Length: 228
Image (cartoon, rainbow, N blue to C red; front, side):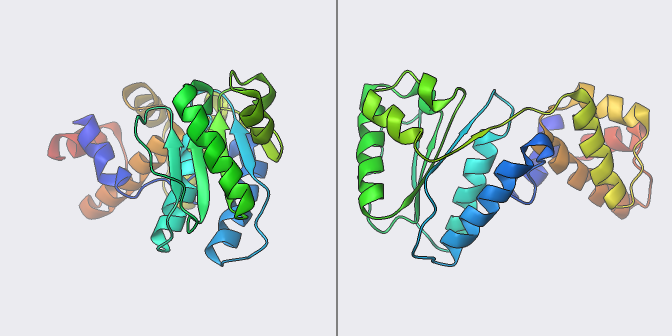
Protein backbone atom coordinates (compact mmCIF):
# COMPACT_ATOMS: atom_id res chain seq x y z
CA UNK A 1 0.00 0.00 0.00
CA UNK A 2 2.84 2.38 0.78
CA UNK A 3 4.31 1.91 -2.67
CA UNK A 4 0.96 2.65 -4.30
CA UNK A 5 0.80 5.98 -2.52
CA UNK A 6 4.29 6.95 -3.67
CA UNK A 7 3.60 5.86 -7.24
CA UNK A 8 0.80 8.42 -7.50
CA UNK A 9 3.29 11.24 -7.21
CA UNK A 10 6.43 9.75 -8.69
CA UNK A 11 4.83 10.06 -12.11
CA UNK A 12 5.70 13.75 -11.76
CA UNK A 13 9.34 12.77 -12.11
CA UNK A 14 12.46 14.43 -10.71
CA UNK A 15 12.93 18.11 -11.43
CA UNK A 16 15.16 20.91 -10.22
CA UNK A 17 12.07 22.47 -8.65
CA UNK A 18 11.33 19.47 -6.42
CA UNK A 19 14.97 18.93 -5.41
CA UNK A 20 15.46 19.73 -1.72
CA UNK A 21 18.83 21.44 -1.83
CA UNK A 22 19.70 21.95 1.84
CA UNK A 23 23.50 22.29 1.89
CA UNK A 24 23.63 21.69 -1.88
CA UNK A 25 22.19 25.04 -2.92
CA UNK A 26 25.27 26.02 -4.96
CA UNK A 27 24.98 22.87 -7.09
CA UNK A 28 21.25 23.46 -7.62
CA UNK A 29 21.82 27.06 -8.72
CA UNK A 30 24.58 25.97 -11.08
CA UNK A 31 22.40 23.32 -12.70
CA UNK A 32 19.46 25.70 -12.95
CA UNK A 33 21.66 27.99 -15.05
CA UNK A 34 23.11 24.99 -16.89
CA UNK A 35 19.65 23.74 -17.86
CA UNK A 36 18.42 27.22 -18.68
CA UNK A 37 21.27 27.79 -21.11
CA UNK A 38 20.69 24.48 -22.83
CA UNK A 39 16.93 25.01 -23.08
CA UNK A 40 17.34 28.43 -24.65
CA UNK A 41 19.89 27.16 -27.15
CA UNK A 42 22.78 29.28 -25.97
CA UNK A 43 25.64 28.53 -28.36
CA UNK A 44 28.40 29.10 -25.83
CA UNK A 45 27.92 25.99 -23.69
CA UNK A 46 28.87 25.75 -20.05
CA UNK A 47 31.99 23.71 -19.22
CA UNK A 48 31.20 20.19 -18.14
CA UNK A 49 30.17 19.45 -14.57
CA UNK A 50 30.88 16.61 -12.14
CA UNK A 51 28.75 15.88 -9.05
CA UNK A 52 29.95 13.58 -6.31
CA UNK A 53 28.64 12.47 -2.96
CA UNK A 54 27.32 9.52 -0.99
CA UNK A 55 24.19 7.57 -1.86
CA UNK A 56 21.14 9.68 -1.07
CA UNK A 57 22.84 13.03 -1.66
CA UNK A 58 20.77 13.70 -4.79
CA UNK A 59 23.17 13.06 -7.68
CA UNK A 60 20.85 10.89 -9.74
CA UNK A 61 17.86 13.13 -9.01
CA UNK A 62 19.76 16.11 -10.44
CA UNK A 63 20.95 14.25 -13.53
CA UNK A 64 17.44 12.97 -14.23
CA UNK A 65 16.03 16.44 -13.60
CA UNK A 66 18.27 17.86 -16.33
CA UNK A 67 17.36 14.95 -18.61
CA UNK A 68 13.62 15.44 -18.01
CA UNK A 69 13.91 19.20 -18.47
CA UNK A 70 15.58 18.82 -21.85
CA UNK A 71 13.39 15.93 -22.93
CA UNK A 72 10.32 18.01 -22.11
CA UNK A 73 11.59 20.62 -24.56
CA UNK A 74 11.90 18.01 -27.31
CA UNK A 75 15.69 17.75 -27.07
CA UNK A 76 17.60 14.48 -27.34
CA UNK A 77 20.18 13.61 -24.70
CA UNK A 78 22.92 11.03 -24.40
CA UNK A 79 22.51 8.99 -21.20
CA UNK A 80 24.95 6.38 -19.87
CA UNK A 81 24.94 4.73 -16.46
CA UNK A 82 26.63 1.69 -14.92
CA UNK A 83 23.54 -0.53 -15.31
CA UNK A 84 23.55 -0.30 -19.11
CA UNK A 85 25.03 -3.05 -21.28
CA UNK A 86 23.97 -1.43 -24.56
CA UNK A 87 24.15 2.24 -25.46
CA UNK A 88 23.76 4.33 -28.62
CA UNK A 89 26.49 5.78 -30.77
CA UNK A 90 27.28 9.42 -30.10
CA UNK A 91 24.82 11.76 -31.79
CA UNK A 92 25.81 15.26 -32.87
CA UNK A 93 22.31 16.60 -32.20
CA UNK A 94 22.37 15.71 -28.49
CA UNK A 95 21.71 18.71 -26.26
CA UNK A 96 23.92 17.24 -23.52
CA UNK A 97 25.73 14.09 -22.40
CA UNK A 98 24.75 12.72 -18.97
CA UNK A 99 26.67 9.97 -17.16
CA UNK A 100 25.65 8.46 -13.81
CA UNK A 101 27.51 6.15 -11.40
CA UNK A 102 30.74 6.58 -13.34
CA UNK A 103 32.69 5.01 -10.45
CA UNK A 104 31.14 1.66 -11.48
CA UNK A 105 31.90 1.90 -15.21
CA UNK A 106 33.53 -1.23 -16.61
CA UNK A 107 36.10 -1.17 -19.41
CA UNK A 108 33.50 -1.09 -22.21
CA UNK A 109 31.50 1.67 -20.53
CA UNK A 110 34.67 3.67 -19.95
CA UNK A 111 35.52 3.40 -23.63
CA UNK A 112 32.04 4.59 -24.57
CA UNK A 113 32.20 7.42 -22.01
CA UNK A 114 35.59 8.54 -23.33
CA UNK A 115 34.31 8.47 -26.92
CA UNK A 116 31.23 10.49 -25.94
CA UNK A 117 33.36 12.96 -23.99
CA UNK A 118 35.79 13.60 -26.83
CA UNK A 119 32.97 14.01 -29.34
CA UNK A 120 31.05 16.26 -26.96
CA UNK A 121 34.07 18.53 -26.57
CA UNK A 122 34.52 18.66 -30.35
CA UNK A 123 30.83 19.51 -30.88
CA UNK A 124 30.70 21.96 -27.95
CA UNK A 125 28.14 19.79 -26.13
CA UNK A 126 27.96 19.96 -22.35
CA UNK A 127 28.73 16.91 -20.19
CA UNK A 128 27.20 16.31 -16.76
CA UNK A 129 28.48 13.32 -14.79
CA UNK A 130 28.17 11.92 -11.28
CA UNK A 131 29.88 9.45 -8.97
CA UNK A 132 30.35 8.72 -5.28
CA UNK A 133 33.96 9.92 -5.02
CA UNK A 134 35.97 12.92 -6.29
CA UNK A 135 37.13 12.64 -9.91
CA UNK A 136 40.80 12.35 -8.92
CA UNK A 137 39.99 9.14 -6.98
CA UNK A 138 37.85 7.45 -9.63
CA UNK A 139 39.05 3.94 -10.58
CA UNK A 140 38.90 4.81 -14.27
CA UNK A 141 41.31 5.09 -17.18
CA UNK A 142 43.48 8.19 -16.88
CA UNK A 143 42.19 10.01 -19.95
CA UNK A 144 38.56 9.73 -18.79
CA UNK A 145 39.30 10.55 -15.16
CA UNK A 146 41.23 13.67 -16.18
CA UNK A 147 38.37 14.92 -18.33
CA UNK A 148 35.78 14.32 -15.62
CA UNK A 149 37.84 16.44 -13.23
CA UNK A 150 38.47 19.26 -15.67
CA UNK A 151 35.27 21.29 -15.23
CA UNK A 152 32.96 22.37 -12.42
CA UNK A 153 33.04 20.00 -9.44
CA UNK A 154 30.38 19.92 -6.70
CA UNK A 155 30.54 17.78 -3.56
CA UNK A 156 26.96 16.96 -2.54
CA UNK A 157 25.97 16.25 1.05
CA UNK A 158 23.07 14.11 2.21
CA UNK A 159 20.75 15.92 4.59
CA UNK A 160 20.95 14.79 8.20
CA UNK A 161 17.89 13.93 10.31
CA UNK A 162 17.41 17.45 11.61
CA UNK A 163 17.75 19.02 8.14
CA UNK A 164 15.38 16.45 6.66
CA UNK A 165 12.72 17.27 9.26
CA UNK A 166 13.22 21.00 8.79
CA UNK A 167 12.85 20.80 5.00
CA UNK A 168 9.76 18.60 5.29
CA UNK A 169 8.15 20.85 7.90
CA UNK A 170 9.01 24.05 5.97
CA UNK A 171 7.54 22.65 2.75
CA UNK A 172 4.39 21.64 4.61
CA UNK A 173 4.06 25.08 6.22
CA UNK A 174 4.44 26.78 2.82
CA UNK A 175 1.25 24.92 1.83
CA UNK A 176 -0.53 25.93 5.00
CA UNK A 177 -0.09 22.45 6.52
CA UNK A 178 1.00 21.80 10.08
CA UNK A 179 2.70 18.45 10.65
CA UNK A 180 2.74 17.29 14.25
CA UNK A 181 5.79 15.59 15.72
CA UNK A 182 3.81 12.33 15.74
CA UNK A 183 3.06 12.61 12.01
CA UNK A 184 6.68 13.47 11.26
CA UNK A 185 7.86 10.41 13.21
CA UNK A 186 5.32 8.23 11.38
CA UNK A 187 6.45 9.45 7.95
CA UNK A 188 10.14 9.03 8.69
CA UNK A 189 9.75 5.52 10.09
CA UNK A 190 7.15 4.08 7.68
CA UNK A 191 8.24 5.57 4.36
CA UNK A 192 11.44 6.16 2.43
CA UNK A 193 13.62 8.73 4.16
CA UNK A 194 14.75 10.06 0.79
CA UNK A 195 13.58 13.67 0.58
CA UNK A 196 12.44 13.40 -3.00
CA UNK A 197 10.08 10.58 -2.04
CA UNK A 198 8.93 12.45 1.06
CA UNK A 199 8.10 15.54 -1.00
CA UNK A 200 6.07 13.38 -3.37
CA UNK A 201 4.26 11.89 -0.38
CA UNK A 202 3.55 15.37 0.94
CA UNK A 203 1.94 16.26 -2.41
CA UNK A 204 -0.29 13.19 -2.21
CA UNK A 205 -1.23 13.82 1.43
CA UNK A 206 -2.04 17.46 0.68
CA UNK A 207 -4.34 16.50 -2.18
CA UNK A 208 -6.05 13.80 -0.13
CA UNK A 209 -6.52 16.13 2.84
CA UNK A 210 -8.12 18.74 0.58
CA UNK A 211 -10.42 16.17 -0.98
CA UNK A 212 -11.57 14.85 2.39
CA UNK A 213 -11.52 18.23 4.16
CA UNK A 214 -9.48 16.75 7.00
CA UNK A 215 -6.21 17.65 8.69
CA UNK A 216 -3.16 15.50 8.03
CA UNK A 217 -3.03 13.03 10.90
CA UNK A 218 -1.81 9.46 11.25
CA UNK A 219 -5.39 8.09 10.88
CA UNK A 220 -5.82 10.11 7.66
CA UNK A 221 -2.53 8.78 6.26
CA UNK A 222 -3.55 5.20 7.08
CA UNK A 223 -6.95 5.72 5.43
CA UNK A 224 -5.24 7.19 2.37
CA UNK A 225 -2.98 4.16 2.16
CA UNK A 226 -5.93 1.78 2.50
CA UNK A 227 -7.77 3.57 -0.33
CA UNK A 228 -4.78 3.79 -2.67
